[in-house]
Image (cartoon, rainbow, N blue to C red):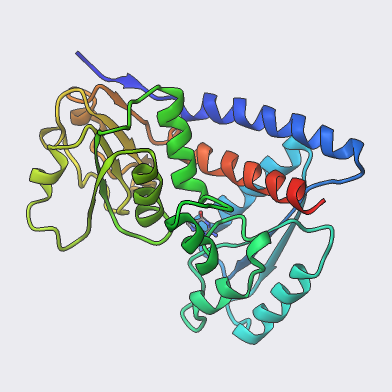
Length: 282
Ligand code: GUN
């Protein structure tokens, strides 16, 4: 038996339709949600992500501003731009695309964003709120994963959830959301001694490492729900996930494809967070 494919593209379109409806409601009150996306440097993947985010805003009727700066921009200049956006009443959400050039301290930059406009949910106060069970913004990728699990009616209470990759952007907030949903959570990292032993226990397996094919079918419990957060461009130009899809699809009960899985959900949840920010700030 092969796994059911979880269609993130289709679900993301439904969520974006709902966002567009909320934008119409806000317009009746004279509010147009605005997102500022800030990109520093010329990382090709970041450029694609930022373009997709801005396009999705426009389609849903949000106001969006793309600010692109050269890698030579100083940290002080970036902090100054963020201060201006913090005070701009037409901007409800601010996103600084990561990674930043190495001469910048990403923590310092993120901490400069007003927490009530931090639609990525990366600010320490938002991370703290999530950790203590009172989230203001859920980070977009883990939030999108939760929406996928919800739409597939995956039971989470008491489930064994294993996350591979412990980043601040995905792994750690993913752990908090799954924990809040009642799962027993294992968070694996690059030092995990026997990764296979961990992943084999998972009813829900989330893989977010940036290492293509790190999880193969033999590492998956038969029937498990497998969520592949990785987006890796191979030498052939094709996108691949962190999960070896061809072997995993033979074992899993349900699996997300790459592309067309988690990626479009991240963008949809960014729109949700931006509309929520505008609804709160209006
Ligand atoms: N780089 C990779 N993923 C993300 C994300 O979700 N937000 C931002 N700001 N940068 C990223």
